[in-house]
Length: 170
Length: 453
Image (cartoon, rainbow over all chains, first blue to last red; front, side, top):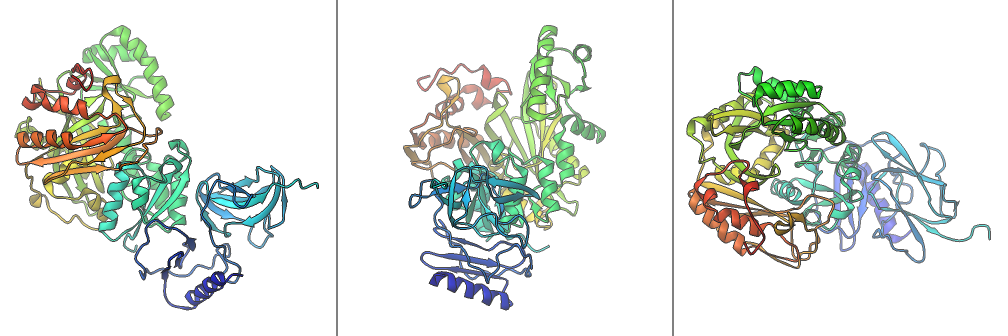
């Protein structure tokens, strides 16, 4: 786990225990917004315009198990791009919605780093208003990076996974 | 419910800029729902957050209710502003917002639905004792249409019950045109609106288009902000709008204002709305045309003569506030004109001209306002309408306002795309326009060859 990831987890644990309802933290290369009550926490790099820090709004904490668990590794987002990254192919979201990495709560994720995928392999679900859309890999290769967190809002075109297009039969 | 603090703007272009500005001034966090083609647009640069909701095509982005709702839920928005067009008058969006605990910045779904069906709206308004354009109920067959047309008297207008905003209409001057128009109007109506219900209205050859802006709160208070004259139209698209309607008698203006307030009150309306009327200049009679249950493109002309910020009022009214002003506190000062600047080539049949803006210099000065999403280097995408900017001026009287608009359009420099500015200049210079001798067919009767004319 990187230093930044450790700090983010510490902040989340602090928020969990505190009576604050919202935290916004901005530094030169990081904007962290944490809100309680059902609003999905997100980490956005390179925001064009940063809101003023320190605003508090009142909501309560939700115990939805599909929302990011502060104990697990939080994914830092890199700038989403359609171009190849480090020779890896991005798989992007075909629609906007809530991304689920596993078929249901408690089940193992569809794919992990190292999982071999074919074109038709389901790699995640994206939900809009209770309709769950299966996202297929579209390429043959193996997953090298998981770029989103479970339960997170993903935008149309957002990079979900990075895949290396190897010949998996050797 | 807590006060609105995060608004999802489910629209694009100049109206998205307008709504985001109002949010910023109210300390409200703005989230723009943008298609892929609008990710680098001006509203995207202004919003506190942008979420990409789909590919460029409106059917896959701006028109997807479930995507807009999911974007609102996922970004923690507590309200959605639909702008105009797109989903603004889709009652299903208002219903889904309500179902998910999100405020819809607009009226209740029921009011949208009732005024959305133009035939139903006519019936509702008729019951209030307000005149509607002489016309028919639903005409189910060409036979019925012909009988009705003969009663009303040709020429007649074939209209779609599910349409509005000038779409799905055909003029028929006689039986053969009615026969041809009936089938094609029904087909177009079914394709565009999913409903092929047609009705007829008398065609009024010498008409003015007048409309009244209203605001209403959830406590039953309704006020009007005066009327607008939008008679200058090309293919039912407004090009120049003014406030007040200076060529119409005070009696008529009072009549339409009073009628508009009564219509809104009878619907238990909430928010901003506009009731449109046709004024028959030959008969000196006004008739209810339709009601638009959303903010309109031309709202700025009302804002600059009343000093009321209609978008901020929309947000406050959606937030359960009572109207902040009583009718007696609304006053009108001066004369306002708005010109819609489109990226199109008037000399080539008004063909749209999407493209990159290489030069951009806005007009300025006192009482000159420009609502736009354009900027130097902006590439207007081809997937949407061609409206690039609205220039709004206010003067102490109409002649002064016309002069100010002429000068502003002269100052407004746009390079890289053709615009309708030469056509607007032609209109402003025309003696008929200046003397008020116009009607809704006047623009189309103009012979305009191009910038050299």
